[in-house]
Length: 366
Image (tube, rainbow, N blue to C red):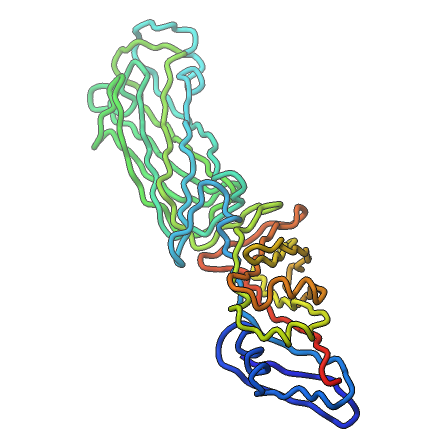
């Protein structure tokens, strides 16, 4: 830690002093013990001292939507909701709608059907590292579509795509040569997902290729269903809508209670200079609060630009004397993302860092 004094009379008086670790207290103790002499026989003048402080790390947990959890510094775990892909027999075979359950030779049926699922709310896209999807197939038809009788064999193609770009995330073919799916029967298929970009949603698609077969009850209202269950997705980046979200408050100590009273008496005013590293590319309002046991807190607000930067908060000498040199004093930062902000690209382990230092104006000499 270092303290630098600037300003003074025309005699060129300028002193520097160096102290050990600690926030404020070390530098002021050096002053109190004579490490940097304050002349008393010269005219009084104002001198500015800069006291470097600790950094506050604003973690991203407050920016993550429900359904997204940080897993160490390597991945987010995203848990999308399951959804159903369903078709009535009449949707696949329009002549079947009029049969009403009559037992007739099963006609050949070909077609496809799909439905949409979504990533957790406010997740606009992710970069997928790993994951899997379950297809839970339930046959509510009056016949086996992939083994309809004799040597006839059909197939089902199950596909999961990214939406809206259409990239295939999972794809499998269930053939009647290996599987049977009798009326009321079910199949469970688990498929690993292909790494890469995923849009704001997913599409489950079922391709239906069922050849002609033995007589069976044909009812247009019977349905074929596939529940699509995405399992925990591990992603290396998540693009989220973080507008108006609050960052968790973070605080650090600002004093250890051993500042000499004479130094405090000479303090006229000061400012807390804040240098902000902002990796998220969105603006935010920061609330900075100074607190000490038994003292009413002092609160100031500043705006942080999307690219970060340096800002300063001004305090009177009386305000600072309520906190500097007092045991348990802390400064706390709370952030709220700009309600008009654009999407935020979140990566595991990323955080905004606020580095604080006090610039104190002391009257010396006199």
